[in-house]
Image (tube, rainbow, N blue to C red; front, top):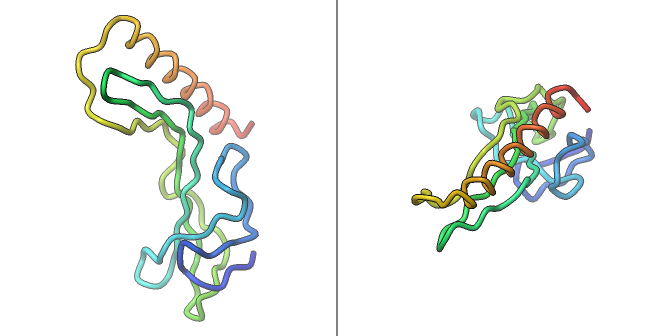
Amino acid sequence: MTSTTNTSTTTTDAPCPWWCERPAGHGWEDDVIGESAVERGHEHLVGKVGHRLRSIAVDVSGCERAVLYPNGQVGDVIGFVEPPAVNLYGDHPEPMTAGEARELATVLLAAADLLDRVVAGR
């Protein structure tokens, strides 16, 4: 793997998991453990549900960590420090209609199905 700095603008040839929708070679984030490791997140947006003036986004995401050497070189990937999981983002929901609840449930089921495939490695 090649990467020579610890900023989020760095690109890398480290492969992303098959489910990651971020651009290929997206970089490592700033160092997270003093100067000994860097992290990069992987994500897959499953859907957005509009709810009145608010919206909720549902994704599957996780964060992996790699060794950062004193010379700024990024080494081997250590593994996921935040295992892939289903996440909800957005405003705090207000009461929903039955249709809005079903729409959110449909997106959450799709996210759960994707997470099952991610965990199974397919």
